[in-house]
Length: 247
Image 1 (cartoon, rainbow, N blue to C red):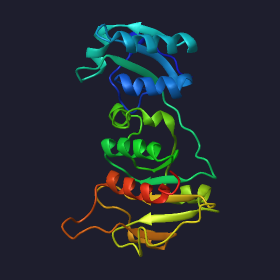
Image 2: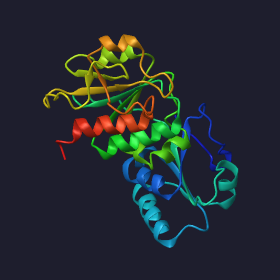
Image 3: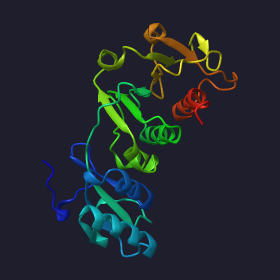
């Protein structure tokens, strides 16, 4: 059970059962999409009147504790120009079995992870699987990089890729994105009636060769002037290709 006194708030660490949304936009996204997970909202005296009115309305409607306390910002937030903080109970939702998934195997960079989350939401993919070990999806850096989009998706962590496929590998197409993939992105079409999983490795090593035998392996063609694409950029290109006929 989540219990917390505001005066006991600590700087974020992974061991805590709560996290923070730092900034107006991420916190408003939190209030719009995950009201049941919000334990408190803290405002700075410098907050604009318009944002204050919006926040106060959400807090009134959903009976969320609202507090103005300038000192808390200096204690738990290292950045300047942040005037709104949401205190969020950590949670996890099971992925939809009939939905399309993005699967990231051992991502290590919280900025990349947040950008991937935002890209997923932008193109209508609402389910994200994280294969451990993975960057902390609840770290405020991840939440801020996602611009609060984290609160619009379902995400679930798995101890291994095998456990993910045991639960979701049947009745869906698996596409592994690799530098040495067998098919070029865009050279084939996907059956829209079958859900798919787009699978990516981490920033430094990508996916191991064993993934060549998992579903259809794919490479994204680029010039030889670079050795590889940034992970979040590769995910964005892949998602665009798979969803471009939807929009």
